Amino acid sequence: MLIRDLSQVRFRDGSTCVVASGTLLKDPYTGRRIDFVRGRGSSGSLDIDHLVALGDAWQTGARSLSQAEREALANDPLNLAAVSASANRHKGDQDASTWLPTATGWRCTYVARQIAVKKKYRLWVTPPERTAMTRVLGTCPSQPLPTENDPGVALKQH
Image 1 (cartoon, helix red, strand yellow):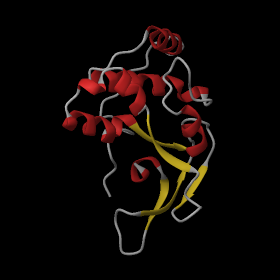
Image 2 (cartoon, rainbow, N blue to C red; image 1 turned 90 degrees about the horizontal axis):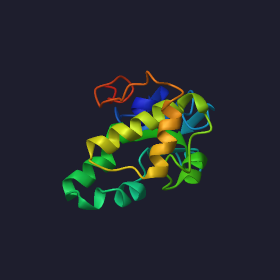
Image 3 (tube, rainbow, N blue to C red; image 1 turned 90 degrees about the vertical axis):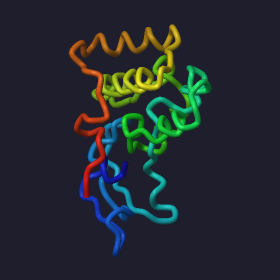
């Protein structure tokens, strides 16, 4: 996810896959720029978030999925994004009815990706979550539901 979501990616010496540093130009949750440098105490500003939190997924149907399906959900690039660690920790296992990114310009994408993930894994939404999602998507009626083949969701090749 770091390779996909960061710009100016630099790899650890001798590696083509271990990210040593990079820049999240616009954190989808806060809108701020985050510079990432791997290392003890210095990489804590960035998390890889499950857009549909695994706790929320469990409560809305993931417990009925097979082990392989649960692992696919947990590792699906459609459900993962590099984000501000502090915003992610504030979000926790909340759904769209109780938490939305402070970066209002990303809310439509956030909700659309949550819906796409829930649809893909046959998870449901609660009535309050449906109300919140409908309200958000009402501000962007042409917002498409993404797929794993969409730019920005598929892994970059390196």
